[in-house]
Image 1 (spheres, rainbow, N blue to C red):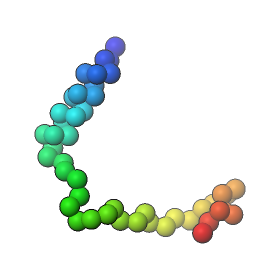
Image 2 (spheres, rainbow, N blue to C red):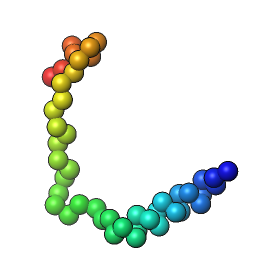
Image 3 (cartoon, rainbow, N blue to C red):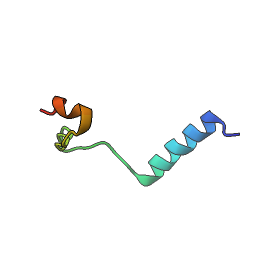
Image 4 (cartoon, rainbow, N blue to C red):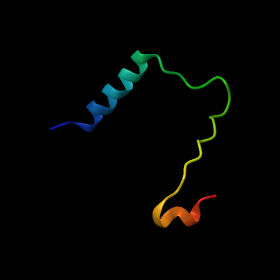
Length: 45
C-alpha cells in the first residue's frame, strides 16, 4: 500500500533535487495548433 503523504513528499523532494524553477522569461508560449478530426471537426477554429 502506498501512503499518499509519503508519495507527495517524495515527489516534491525529487523536484527540488532536479533544481526546477519557474520561468523567468515571461508568460508561457501559446499552444501549437492542431487539427480536429471526427465529430469534433466542426469546432476547429
